[in-house]
Image (cartoon, rainbow over all chains, first blue to last red; front, side, top):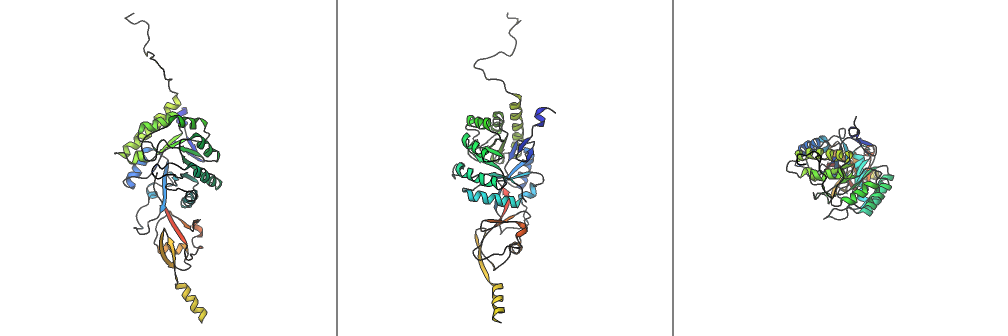
Amino acid sequence: MAKHEQDFLTIGSFHCRSRLLVGTGKYKDFDETQKAVEASGAEVVTVAIRRTNLGQDQNAPNLLDYLSPEKYILLPNTAGCYTVKDAVRTCQLARELLEGHPLVKLEVLGNEKTLFPDVVQTLTAAEILVRDGFQVMVYTNDDPIVAKQLEEVGCVAVMPLAAPIGSGLGIQNRYNLLTIIEQANVPIIVDAGVGTASDASIAMELGCDGVLMNTAIAAAKDPVLMARAMKLAIESGRYAMLAGRMPKRRYANASSPLKNQITD
Amino acid sequence: MPRFQVRRVYMTESILITLNGQPKEVLAGISLDQLIADLALHERRFAVEVNEHVVPKSQLSKICLSVHDKVEIVVAIGGG
């Protein structure tokens, strides 16, 4: 098998082939969610934890009827949490809901407008959760110091944002991302801010281990088609990185031989 | 006689708790699994918290509610 064919992504105790991780929010309905997730080829799928609606029809389907925990590696998130306490509570509820499944996506937000992470609280929450046996994939900013600290407290993956959640702006600070990748001993997964296929490819070409996205697919005019595009983008970016790109040059370097031209 | 009457009052006494952020009257001492059955919650996958502590499913029949208890019942939904 060629090297790129044995190219698994290992996050904590979980292994997957796909380096595209997707969210399940903002879709039109469960059917569209399921089709888009399938088209993406993603194996890791994020979910949110929220109060059940006690008034509604109790026979209404649940998301997990469409995205079975048997087929997918579910990644419950702490979206909307602004404190350590709320993030930790949410993770404990998620673990109980998913019958002991230890993987969580930790996010502790600092601002409603930007949804940037409060990295100080994030670090504190990460330490608590790691000690409690969770495998923590942690949403953070593109600060290499914080990224390393999150790795050192025991997170199984560090997930720096490309740009604000849902902004679609693409990677805003590729050199910081490069530094984070170079110094990391855990998978680095770009999470948040991806807008289109090239953003995902660039992340993979820089050396990221994977990309997590939600809005880029769900808010596309054709989400299922965008999911396919993203699958290919992740693969092509990864192969390009493994292939070792050509160096950049200041000046031209002809592609056809200079000798024996009829114009000599 | 009086003691029997006091016990009957206790069993039909209603208490106010908070359920998913809303006030709710329930029978004093009701167990969590009875509360869930009364709510006709058919969700297969959910988790329960009382006063900010997760209650394992195996303990739902053993935890009984008191006045002012805060109960949260959560499920997984779409999110990024």
